[in-house]
Image (cartoon, rainbow, N blue to C red; front, side, top):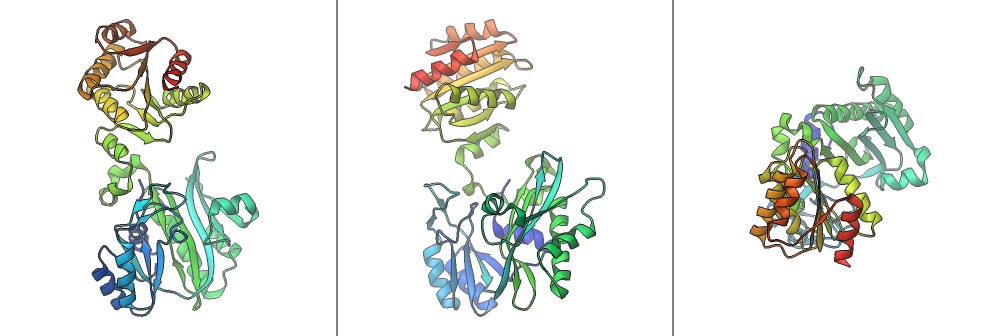
Length: 385
């Protein structure tokens, strides 16, 4: 789960992470009030779930409250297109209004889970304010890493080591160590999968602050954090993904035109691979789960065909826990309700496969039944071509 910058800063501040003075607003009048309370110059930052806001015009400086209101009138409601939003862009509904600071240095600090080492890694770099992926590619020696042993946690010497490598000194060094420790505490306590401060700034007076903040969370741990769940902004999510989440379906929209519905994540990945091998491009990842009910299959089917980019669909089911006849009934019932208009290839295998195929054949609907994954993939691609 992703949240906005202002929400990430609210969480981080609770754990002692220093942030600039600011508030969020959704009207120009509210922006004016916040700017007036802050006093002096302010920065208006568009709140969307995407990076690259500055280059796209989503971050503006205002000299006074009146100018802040005028800038807000233009920004609120605008469609912001960045390298991460795609050509569709995202509508700006809220602005974070913060004090403008005199910046001495821009650094980077981030925490993620390194799955190859099965532990968190705290990363720091002197190259802040730019894409960390670019730094990793061009100057990997400037990214410093400290891996966290799950048995001991993040140790004090590791924070000091990173602060030394960032070139911090004196009182700023102490503030930097505190900042890094506080960030890790927030990461661990909230079951985050990512906590990234880019840039981490050193001001003219030596303060250490999170100028920007990004946090993502492990969906499987959200039941422990209802306060974080309340921060979800469905306007920032793909509508079909939001709909799928209502039925506990694993759905991710992709850029292709071949719809996929599969039971089991491993089989779903293999199905997507074989579609691409046959010359097609998957339009989604859709896993109905190993024990999918007839109702779940029906809901998944409706979501699958409601994507206008889908020109043909492949349903690939291996009946283990779930029976093929149950899946077939769900497919038939859903196809009748939505009035199927695209070619549909179905490959069933496993428990009650014969009964499942009989249901499809007797449905009176034009399903293309395949016996193997290879045959199914080639058939669905040929139907589009």
